[in-house]
Image (cartoon, rainbow, N blue to C red; front, side, top):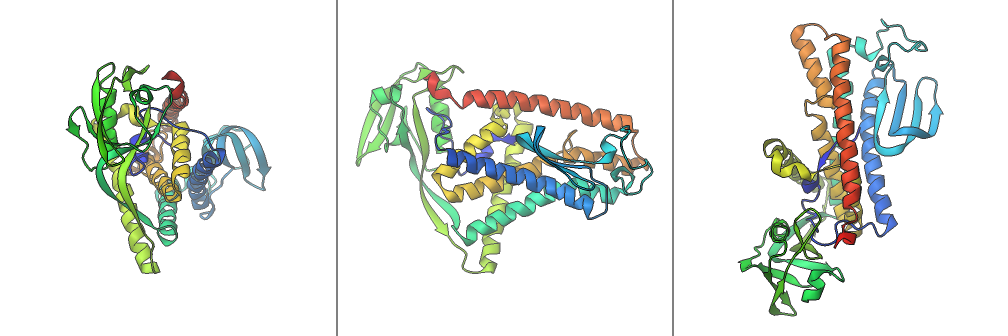
Length: 390
C-alpha cells in the first residue's frame, strides 16, 4: 500500500514554487509520466512481498495493483492477478487473511500458509517490499548518473521569478518573468537551498501588509512595493512562481566504479533528506503536519518535475521509493513495520498473540490510514486549483 509522504521532502532539490500557482497540470504527458513512476514504485513494492513468498513456497491468493473494482483480472492456477480502479496502492493477499472463508482449499495447519511459517520466513516476506524499493531506488540513481548525470547546484543570492500570473497583485505591481528577487522588506535573500521557502514564508506572513521587494532586472536593481492579497487560508499571496537561483552542473559517470560511488552518494543524500523530514514531523508535528501529503499531490509534484527536467524525474522516483521504504518501516499498525513489531512481540513472548488481537490492531490501523488518506486526497485535490482563488 502506498504510504504518506512529507511533501516538503519531495520538493527538496525541486524547491517549492508556491506563491501564485500551486501545481500546474498542463501537459498530460508529464502527468502520465508521474503516474507511471508511481505505479512502477507500487508494483515493485508489492512484487517484493509476492516474490519473497513464492520463492519460499508460501501460498499466495491475490496480487493487485490499485484498490477498488478490478479493471483487468486474470485468474492463474493459484493466484488472482488484477489491475484495479484506484491506482494509489496495491496489495498481496494470502489465504490466512480470511481463514473463515469456506472456499479456502488450504487447511489451517498447512505448513505453507504464511501464518504457520517460522518468524524468519514471515519477516522476510514482510520486509521484502521495503528491500525491493531500496534496490529499485539505487538502480534508478545508478541509471541517472550513468546517463543524464548526477546534478549538483551552486546556489546564488536571490530567487528567480519564472512566471507572474496575470491579474495578480504582483503583475499589477510590475513584476516580470525573469526577475530575481534580492531583498524582501529590506532583508537580503541569501544564497541557500532554503531561499525560496524563506521568501514564501515572509509573503505568507504578510497578508494586506505593504512590502518592498527588490528585484534585479537587466542588471539593474528595482524596488517594487506590493501588498500581498489574503488567500483563503489567511496567508499572503502575490501571484508569482519562484525557483532557486542556482547554477546547475552535471557529472556523468565514466565507468561502473564511479557510477556506483555517485549513486551511493545520491542515495545517502536522499535518505538523509527523508529521515530528517520524518524526524521533523515526529518531533515538530504542529508545524509540519500540513506538509504531509497524499498521492494526488505526489503526482502533481511529479508532473511538474517531469516538465522541468528529466534528471528531476529520476530524483523524484528515487526519493518516493526511499520515502515509501522508510515510512513502511515505522512500527505503526497496518504498515510493514507494524507487522515486524508484532513479530518481535511474538519472539519476546515465545508464542503468537491471539489472532483476534492482531487483527484488531491491524484493522484499526488500516481504518485510520484510509481515513487520513481520504482527507489528504480531498485536501490535495482542492489545492491543485489555487489560481481560481487569486
